[in-house]
Image (cartoon, rainbow, N blue to C red; front, side, top):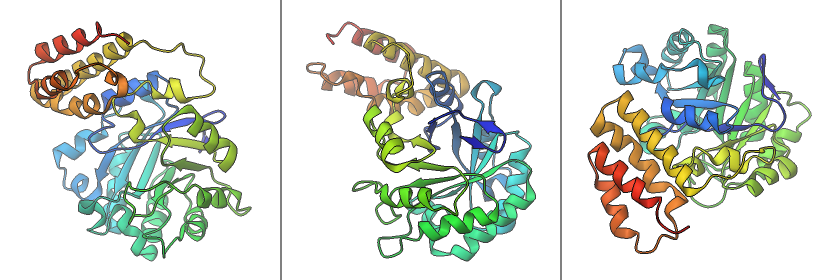
Length: 322
């Protein structure tokens, strides 16, 4: 499978772009464990054009994580074009356009999945961004705004005509948010359309190796993108990739990886905010399931504000029975 000149090999797994999750430290860990492609957190076009520093910092990428994509969202053609030109200076391998984020503060303002209510504008933004940059442009979107507007089969062709070089489809509507089950049947329909020649990447409810195999075997996608299942599990890719030959990790090894992630975040930001940034992963990781009477320890872990205290708690959990 190729996007532009980037060859990802057969049946690659991608890390989904996620706000407050896919920072550079987490991306590097996911890359280590087999993610074929990683993406930054969402980058607001308008904030980037205004040089908001918290947004500008999201453009920081490392050669060690390549190939890496920077994902842009916005609702204004000129802002998206200008932002794409700024993004290109950071030298990402791909510029991805976010037409799929369902959260109210994004979609409610007409950006992200909100663009699914204004297809002419969505297509115009895509067309103009493609013309403005030399970096391959891709799109991530959903099946449609709601169950009465399942437009992805037609939209995929229109986006391809705009010049994008790959399309990621999350198998839900905006109205579903993250509830219910992802519907991959329309993703398969897009992939089987003889007029579609760009790679189709499937996304939604990938939680295991069996899910990955089903996505490739039953729905025929070119790549699988994984989102929420990676929270607290940067090793997910080595466990879920049918091609992986990596040995299984022990709980002790996984705790060491989470401690490494904590230290990366503290060094990258500062102690307090680095801990806050890591908490989402510590709260979501499944590796502590089955530890008897874990609740008090979990509370202490998620309330810790000192690096030494948090590491001490994590180290103590290595001694718990598997």
